[in-house]
Length: 504
Image (cartoon, rainbow, N blue to C red; front, side, top):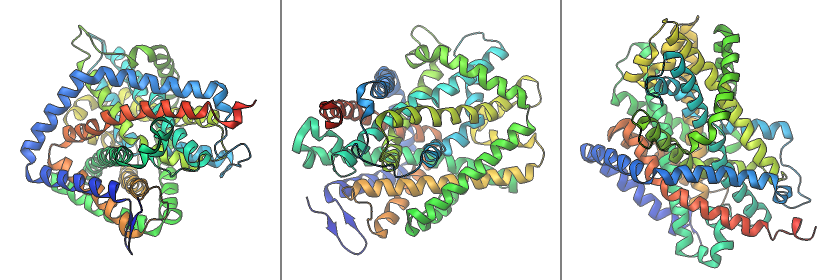
């Protein structure tokens, strides 16, 4: 179907209009009926975790195994863009961009909160404090490790292959044409793209909600303000306006400069905590946690806590993470696809699994390891602090180090810039999906989606806070997990007939 085009919009009506209507109705209902929405979110999350968590456990393992198969089979030799294609970026720049894809609000928000939450809810009954600390870091690695990037690389490889090798539009429905044929160019294909749009919006809104919580907490801690929902809403509105300006300025200007600033600030904070913390102890912790993670990865990825009691929190928390990451996969997958022309499937799979995972491990080891050390030596009871408010953990940790006024302010800026770049990048991806794969849609369209992302985040915070944020990801992550399985089958079908390997 031909796009509807005017000065401000260039849209695929069967995708844009339903996506916009569903989003607006959701925001309106959640804000107007916040109490009912909060109860509904809680019940929905509990039901899905109890009855369908096993499906997600199997899914995340399948996605990782599938990507490893692509990497180490003859299919890994296939080059994105054709056998004569040249990389759009040199190896260093490409790896750096994969590294930046691993950075986000979640990594900052949960750098202290995640290990301490695991410390408070150990997976093993009657664990000692030291055992709880080891388990906490191991489980944190699990939630930020190879399974996450298996999800992202599956979709990234599929989108890249069908876009650059098959010359199809950069949209999710294009990846399913080998499986369903031209039906993907009618309502079934539009439905797939609508689910992808909603998954991206709600997954992104979850991250923006966490960012707003931590940004407003940082303002409260730094300036002595009262941390309220109103402050969180004001934070979202303010940063969304900045993100909109960045979106309108274009990918090569606003997003490029903000992304570069993000990486520099993040590395500076990382280096500061590493050097002024217990450096050798943190490196030891990284090595030990890596070993614990590697030896337990299969057990953790299939953990369902049957006949147990102490692991219920971990089971529910894990499911939230997996569906959150699945909801993010159209966003990260599209980014990976756009930068990977000229790379082999093996390169994308191996570098995409290892580089971001390793950085996440290092980041969590430095911040989470410092937090656990403070807890174990009695310097600061971060476990109790995080149990009351998970967004304040990072700032309480920084208070124990020199130059708190400087580092706290820098971290507030860091959370803000991550918020802006996430909203900015998300708007571009949603814009791409709702315009039929066009890379140069009008500015009005970008502004619309930037504001919609902020509106969803506000609605979720008003309508249930953390529970609502988790439920939003679950609602879109589950159906999208099924779509990812179909994408993998379609991709294999197409790759096995690729001319780069067929006649060798």
